[in-house]
Image 1: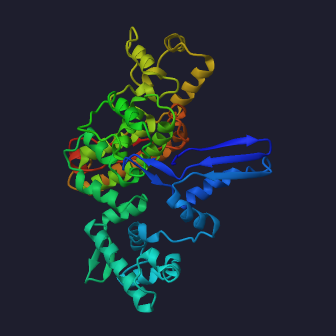
Image 2: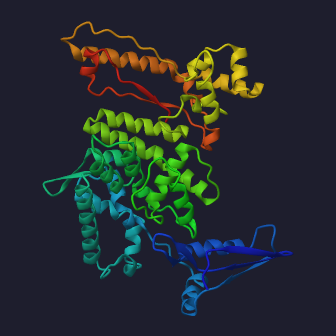
Image 3: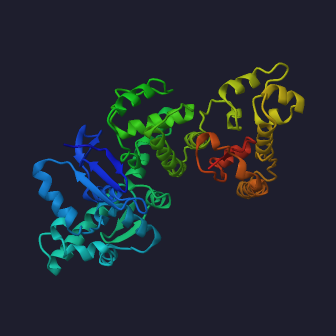
Length: 450
C-alpha cells in the first residue's frame, strides 16, 4: 500500500501512527517514495512528549521494500552533503565576494567542506571511481571545471586565461538577491524592451525557485477553475506545471480572489519569492537601459505588496476598502474621490457619510493617510552645458526629500488584508535617460513599497 497521509489514534496514553511510504508527485503524475529522512521525521510523531507514555508506528509498504526500510530505520542513517547539487550558486557567491579568484581557489575551497570529508567515506554516493588522492583530486577538478563552465555560459562569471575568475553583472545580481543562476539567466535571455505585463508575469513565474511548488492530488481541477477567472489567459496550460501554478496564484493575489487550504499557503510562498525576484529583475532591466520595462517591473513589485492590479483604484491601498467602496467613492456626487489625497481633503462629515465605517475604522484610515508619502520636487537647470552638475543637483534634491519623508514609510502599506508580515517601505529611483528628462523638464520618479 502507499499513502501520503499520516494519522494518529490516541488510546489513553498510547499513540498509534499508521503511515505509507509514498506521496503523489503532480509533475510526474505518479507516486514517489518519501525520502528516508522524511519518514524518520513522521515517525517522531508516534509519541508526543508529556502526553503519551509510549507510541507505535506501523509502516505500510510493498513487500520488496520491507528490508530496505528496516535497514535504514533501525540503523544509524548516514548524513551526506548535498553541496554538489547546489554548487553553482555557492561558487558564484564566493567569486562575487572575492573569496575565489581562480579555479585552484575553487578546488581549495571544496577541500574545507563537509562534502570533501564524506567523499572517501561514501564514494558511491558521490559517483567516485576510487578513494585515492588522485581520484579525489580529479573528481574535484572536474566538478569545478563543469560548474564554472555552466556559470560562464550563464554570463555570471568570466574566465580569463582559462584560469582566473571574475564576477559579471548577472552573477552579482544573483548573489545579492540570493536567487538561482538559472533564474537570472532566464531573466536575461527572456526579457526584451518590448515585454508587456503578461510576458513579464510569465517570465517571473518561470523562475527556478518555483519549480519546487507541490502539485497535490486533485489540485489540477482547482488550478483549472482558478485560471478560468484570471485576467491573463494561458496557451495550452499544463495544470501539473508548478510554474503555471505560480503564475495563477500571482494573478489571483492581484485580483484578491479568495483561496483556501493548501493553495493559500502555496500562494504565500510564491509571494515571498516574488518580491526578491522582482528586485533582481529590475536590476537586469536597468542594466539594459529599458526605461518603460523597468517602470513596469517596479509597478509589478507594488502589485505584489499591495495585492492589486496596476489599473485598480489607488484607494484599494487603504484599510477596509473593497472594490465596491472604491467604485462608490469614484461615483461620489459633486467630486469624484480617486486618490488618497482626494479623501484627505474631504470634510469629516462627508467622509463619514461616504465611507459608512465605525470610528475605529476611520481612525485606522486617517492614520494611514497621514503617513502616506507626498513629495513635491522643483528644479531648474541653470547651465544646460554642464548637464552633469545638474544631474547631481537633481539626485541630491530627490534623496533629501526621500530622507525627510522616511519617517512615514513604516505604515505606507496596509498589509492586514494581504496576510503578509508588516514591513517598512522603500523607494525606486529611476534616473534613466536623465539628460532627455532634464531638457524636457520631466523627472521620472516613483516610490515603490518594498
